[in-house]
Each structure stands twice: as structure tokens, then as C-alpha cells.
Image (cartoon, rainbow, N blue to C red; front, side, top):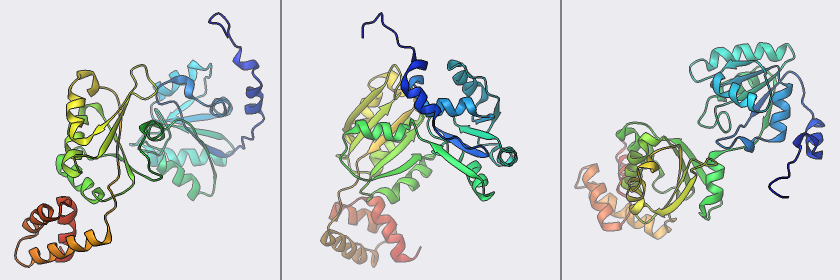
Length: 301
């Protein structure tokens, strides 16, 4: 196809395939929408949105603009974190009246670090139908481009905003062998990197997926010890939404676990929990946070 040639999308056979799908009434449709590039929306999502009686969305202005891009003008109602329970009741009423309701967030899949889960729960609790329309997901996009070889991942989402909260959230993950998946806002990315560096081994692989599917998309992989330097080397890297992936811990052998436990038990008989964890980390090479958590368990604190 040359640059001068164009395609009338409406005439493509695949659009007919979308039209032949089943879209039952009295159903809540959980619809994934683009995370950046508007053309990532699925044909099925477009067709369902055109059939919807109403679109429940995180921001009516953003969703209204998205609908207009595709020549749609469905009515919208706000469904965000501050009114989710209230609007859930209204959606249940609409569904009982036989309507099709589409549920979307500002970007990506509703209910995944975005509002929507409470609405879906309310609809299911009312015995009504829920149908997911899969599509764009920042976490899956980042994993696919990371090159981290692991069959399992642990989705964490956003870390707490305060330093102590981040430390507490990361401590139980120190020995997690699955790839860890975090979301982070641009104004907190440096704080996030520093927290990760304090919690995990410096040689762990970390992947930054920034501005996925947008004009300035960037996917970078490095060791955790080099992560802060990479982020701060260019001021533009502290802009845009991030997915941060951290390689899972190397699974400890039973012998290593037993030795760390033995050392910790001995030290706890003479030292405080904090001192015992610090010394055990120096002796065994294990992460201090994980040893501290184990020490608390042993002490029953």
C-alpha cells in the first residue's frame, strides 16, 4: 500500500464480524480503552460502545472526547472513586430496566488500579450479567516488552505516597520470585526508585516502561543500582505515567533458608530485633527487611 492509498475501515470484512457478535441487554460491559494511542481500541469495544444506552466513566470529559473521535455520542455518567458505591446503585437500576451499560476508565482496563471493581461487585451481587471486553493494559504491555523471563508476575500497582508506607509495602516482597509490577506517577518516580533500591538487591533487573503507546514511549532495562542515575539523567524522564518492573528474587535453597534462620535465632537471644536483623543480613547476605520481618514473627511481635 502506498502513502497515497487509503482504506475505508467501515468496508473491511472484520467490521461485519464485530456486528455479528452477541451483545445481550441488561448487561454491564467492562470495556478496556486505549492507554495512549487511540487506535489501540478494539473493534468489539467500538461496536459495543455504539450500542450502549449509557457509558459510565471516570471522567466524562475525557470519555466524551474519545467517543467523539469515533463519531459516537452516547450519554455518559461519572463513575469515579468518590461516587462508586452511589453510582453502582443507579447502574443496577438501569440494568434491571434492560439497558446495556458500558463501564470504562480514563485509560486501560477498569478495576485494575482504576475505579470499577465496586461497581462490578454490586452488579454481580444483584445477580446481573457482567461481560469483560479485553483490550489495552499498561502492565501487560510493559511485561511483553521487558524481556524478563518469568512465567509469573505479581501485580502491586501504586505504592503508598509516604516513605514509611512504601517501605512497609515492599518488605514482604523481598523474597518474591515472581516479576513485580508497579505503577507510578511521574512526580514520585525518583522516590519510588530509591525505595526499590533500599528494598531489593542492587543487581536486580528493573524495567521502566514510560508513556506506553504514546509519542515519547520509552522502555529501558538496567540493574537497580543504576536506576536512579538513568531516571535523573534526563529531566523528561520524570514525566508521563510509568510501569516499573522488578525481576523476582532468586529462589533461596533450603540450606540457605535454614542457615539464615539458625543465625537469626542465635542473635535474637542476645540482641534486639533490629540489631539481630542487621547482623544476620551482614552474615548471611540476605535482605535485612526480610530478616526483620522473620525476626518479628519469631518474637511474636
